[in-house]
Amino acid sequence: MSKPNFLSKLTGSFSTPADGNPTVAMVEAAYKAANLNIRYINTEVFPDGLQDAVNGARAMNWLGFNLSAPHKVSVIPMLDGLGESASIMGAVNCVVNRDGKLIGENTDGKGFLTAFSEVLSPEGKTICIFGAGGAARAIAVELALVKAKKIIVVNRNIERGEDLVDTIRTRTSATAEFIQWTPKFSIPAEVDAIVNATTIGMEQFEGKELDIDFNSIRSGMVVSDVIVNPPNTHLLQQAAKRGAVTIDGVGMLVYQGIIGIKYWTGLDSDQTVMRNALEEIA
Ligand code: NDP
Image 1 (cartoon, rainbow, N blue to C red):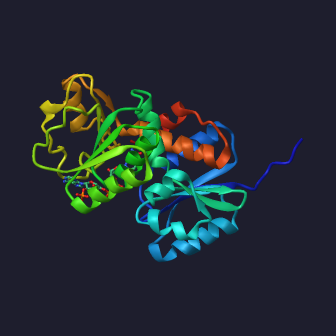
Image 2: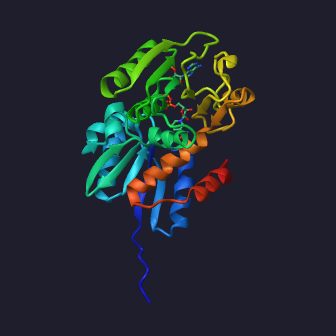
Image 3: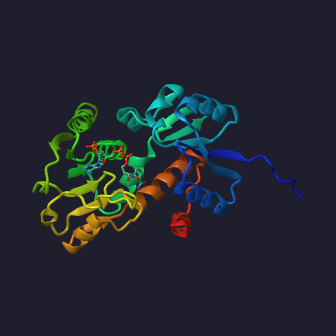
């Protein structure tokens, strides 16, 4: 009889504060289903402790870890290299231990792209993104890297919006346009798909309605939302009423988990197991 192996490999996330992180349930369920002796732990790391936490992960030979705000940018100088899209975005949400080197990747945009591409190929499409924060940057860069024709960024804050458009123009082959958000914003006629990448729609957020003219959503248009809780946002409900094809934020969350697990372990994890784990804690 072979002896049991009591050495666990570690993965996890550095969060501030370490509050309810749905990724934990999802990733641990995937490991368990695959019978892997790997753990995913959500740890509380404050900004002034990030360097020590990264050193600790190195010392314990962690397979990798996720980062939430505010660590996504400040971690970069502590790493040994960056993947292409993380380097363009200037943000890392997933660190991968590759032969002892800690490499920063960004799986948020890749997770979105996987869910989006199941419905529409971004190549040659004009896509309008609401928001210019971390999620919007990740999504815009990934869409541009797979040859979307044009990215339109609509945001309240001009500086953040223009900065994202500048990144797309200078670092990818897509064209990009910034439009400052005006009340009852009307979606331009050239647009094939829209993405809500703002915080609007989140349960704990007061304003749940995107300030757009919902009648400018056309039948057949693809409308996606990054919001996970609740998944069926006001935007998606309005879009469905007008015959649009809708994509909720759960697919993005599950796929970013699947991509992270693949980077860390090589495992192709079971999507159904992960979705069920999310539903159990919802
Ligand atoms: P950021 O704080 O970086 O960006 C927030 C964005 O929302 C900004 O562009 C901000 O605009 C905009 N915004 C906030 N309030 C309003 C408002 N009242 N009207 C118009 N615009 C507004 O957040 P993140 O990008 O990190 O996250 C955005 C959302 O994405 C969150 O809900 C997060 O949970 C979700 N997310 C989902 C993932 C998934 O897997 N499904 C993965 C990652 C994130 P301005 O610049 O003008 O202030």
